[in-house]
Image (tube, rainbow, N blue to C red; front, side, top):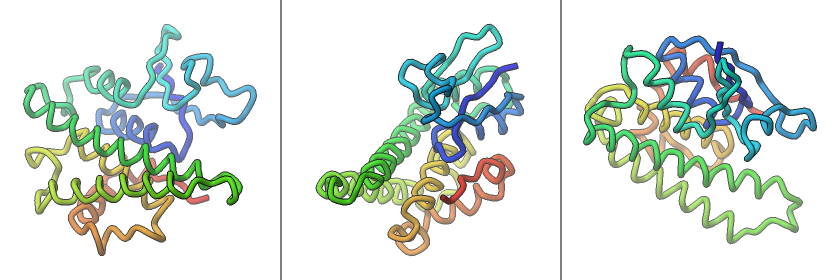
Length: 205
């Protein structure tokens, strides 16, 4: 059986967990602590990052985009990445922007974990600007549509949902989705009715 090395609050690992659940693919979940000297992640990913998918032959795949595509192609059931090139590019574009927002949010979180006197306020402001501009574009592009691309649930919605979950987790006190990004707030409400999103909710703390 395939094994996923993950941390509970990694939005990238959450994306993979949701893809596997939506595709009804059984994978063993192995939660890791990246700071642990015995953490197995580096054995499978030289970058030391999660998620890592360990295959039955002990080979490994890393980066959530690579793993998501691999899992989507494992079964013909409900493709989350469309086969049509134009639609596929649209889904991938949504994913890229959602992941970029997440990258910026993670960068801020890591900077804010430093002692206050060592934090770079200009860097934090720059990354938060990326988050705000990204959310603005996603909100406008979604409009009143139910789903991100062609009114069909896809990897685009999963990536956006994971980005929104992480932004809420880390910056819910300063970013108000309901007030400022009502279209995204509506999408998130729909996503949180799906068992795959419920089961992979990040944990405050």
